[in-house]
Image (tube, rainbow, N blue to C red; front, side, top):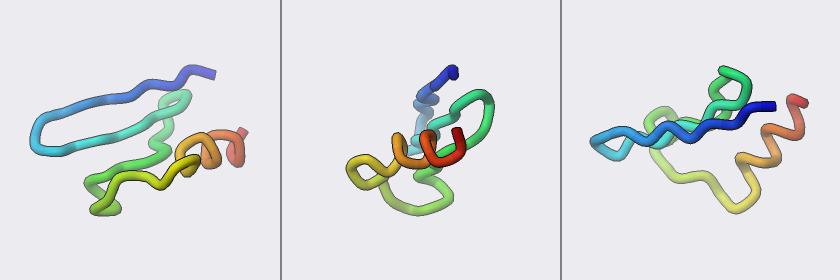
Length: 45
């Protein structure tokens, strides 16, 4: 599995795994909770 953090300007914080968006600060308006990103990656396999 390939995991990539894409940092952008203006507070954008997106995490993608195998090309799929796992978490987006822009969409949620917050940073992920501890373990949230890894949990989502494990959940979707």
